[in-house]
Image (cartoon, rainbow, N blue to C red; front, side):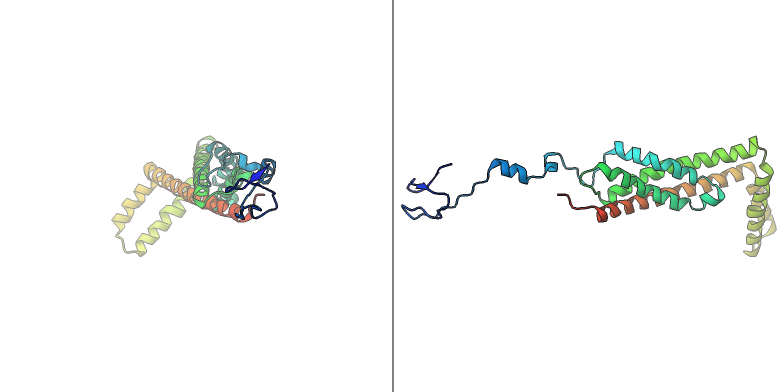
Length: 226
């Protein structure tokens, strides 16, 4: 490519910084197109995802994969259900890690991770609640283990609450009315449902926190892209 002076239009060699005819400084920068293409990383050719946005199709797949086993583990088995909050938090974090495997950039904001964890918690909490309800129904009506639940209710709910109310100074008629309400089908169903709802909300909260932690974890461990 021939270079000419902008003032006198004399031919200038590429190594000349000044025009040999009029002395005008020459500032010429030339980069071959092929070199420019080689210097540009291939991943620049594709669209770069906003780190705060979520592609929900793969996100839901990742959430389902972990919400189902976590929800089953949180469904009330004595040795497994006690760790339900930990299982659900791990499921929220794991869903974020699975989602980030094929995403660019390979990290998301804490808020986006919390949203994925929230969806995981909603799915897992619903599965846990449905499983707990099914187990209670099956145990009482199919396996006829209602007496076990009745004894547990009498000892843990009715008697202990009566002792607490007596210590608090409540009169006997008030305590008797409260015990009658607790031992009624409506009272048992209402309290059981309230406990399940409280546990589900706790699972959702821990899954959301786990998703936020997973996003923070992927941000710390990601490697710089070439």
